[in-house]
Image (cartoon, rainbow, N blue to C red; front, side):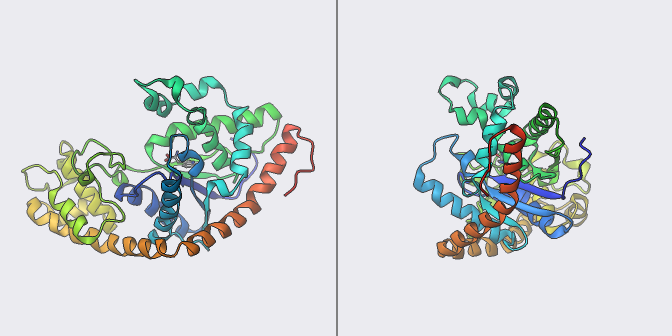
Length: 344
Ligand code: TRP
């Protein structure tokens, strides 16, 4: 732990690489909004387009996905006045600090990342991009270029956050400074982990070939209701307590979704629905999901029809971000021994 005290600052990012779905909403966006509203932190949220291109992205698709993600952030309640909302490539200090971190992090650390191993398993790792290997170093730079102290992420990103701490520690140690904070992960709880509607043991995912496995944030009311009606379940009625869901992943998932959308605990939901059949529970869930998501999807499509508004918000976000990132990069370069002056 460092001695210096850092401004409490939240940073998190989402890749603009495809459809946003209910898992992104409950697991990330809604939590980001809660942290924005909680007070006590500055909040910085980022579309990580530089991370997206570690695997091939069609340029037109990337542009569209980036704007759509920005629309998703805003429609979910991220207020670009309260939070700093940015697209990663528009704040060049992310990539500049990442280079320095590429020289701090060790090949061995990167090679141990399970995400790297999973993404290259059974494939030709020699053919993966160098960027994919260095991905976690850029992620550390995203966080540390803001001196962020708290990072809300899913369980799958925990190892990358540990690596971020290792990079900060090694940098501080090698240069004999107390410059980068040791970031705290804020890991999502089981209640906000949304599983596939077709298989309760798999995470809801944009890459699942079955569209019925997920609720997209752009789905209309009919599509949402239909997917919930068709969601996989088991023949038993709902239990009256959370313990009764232990061996029932599909039932647990639907109850979790209900609880998260309605701001209730699982036990409260089961207090109301225990003993009732899915034929009663599903329509209630569909109604709740539509009430919650339909306004978000219509605000997203309004914004997507007003791209200038999105682009203006991102330009302004980048300006605000650079007030934080430019001095931190300048100081980093000084510490490392780059000859200045470094222009702000
Ligand atoms: N790797 C994260 C993910 O795939 C996205 C990300 C990039 C991120 N940079 C970040 C998350 C910094 C938190 C902080 O989910």
